[in-house]
Amino acid sequence: MENTEPLEQGHGVAPWLGLSYIFAMENLAQLLRYASPNMDSISSFLDSLPHEQRTREVLALRKNEQSALFQAAAGFRPISVDHFVPANAAPFSEVIHLGRNTLPVFSHFAKVFCRPMEPGEDLLGYNRTGTVLQTTVGPGYFRCGACEVDGEVLVDYLRQPLAHPPHWPRLLPIDARLSRFVYHTTQDVLRGVTEHVSIGQPRRDGKFLPSWFVLCRENP
Image (cartoon, rainbow, N blue to C red; front, top):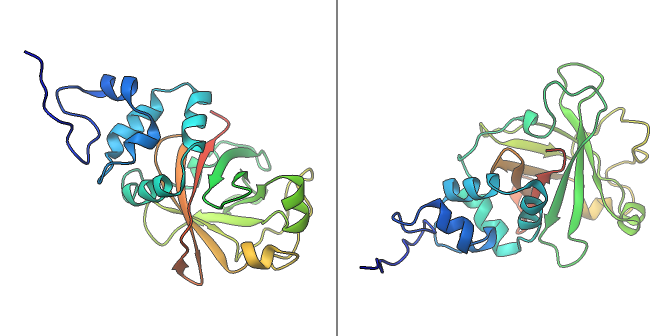
C-alpha cells in the first residue's frame, strides 16, 4: 500500500523517502521554504551537484530564502578563513567567490580573496562588480578574519589592506566616491553552508542590516 504520510514540516523530506526524493523533487530554494530548514538536507543536496549546477542553485536565491539560510546556518558548519582561501595558497593568489545579494539592482558580484605577503595576517580582498559600480562606488577593499562568534568569519571594511595583487583595482579610501553609502562602517558576518558555499549578512555600527548575500567558491 502506498505511503501517503505528509512531509514533515521543517525537514523538507519525509523520513521514509530519503535524500533521493530531495534530489529528484526539490531545489535549494524549495528546501529553504520550510518553517525550519534542515541544514543536513541542504548541505547534502548542494554537495551532490556538479559545480556549475551548484553555483546556479545558490545564485538563484532571493531575499526570503537567503534570510532563512543565514538563520538556519547558525552553528551548523564552523568555518575559518581557510574556507575562502586554502591554507596552502600562495600569497596574492586570488580565490573567487561568486555572489548574489538581496538588493533590487546590481545584485550579482564576486568577492575576491587572497592571502597577504605577510604570514599570519588576515586575508585581504575586494568586491568585483561591473564597470559602472566599480567606477562610481569603488572596489570595496576589506580584511577578512575570525569573527567574535566561534566558527564565523568577518569581512571587515573598517580595516583596509596595505598592499594587494598588482592586477587588482587601485586601493581607494573606504569613504571615497559612493563607498561611504555602501561599505563605510560596514562589516559582513559569514556562516558556512558547505565546503563551497557560505551565507552572509552585513552590519553597520554593530547592528545587522535587513539584507543578505550568498557566496559560492568558483575554484572548486
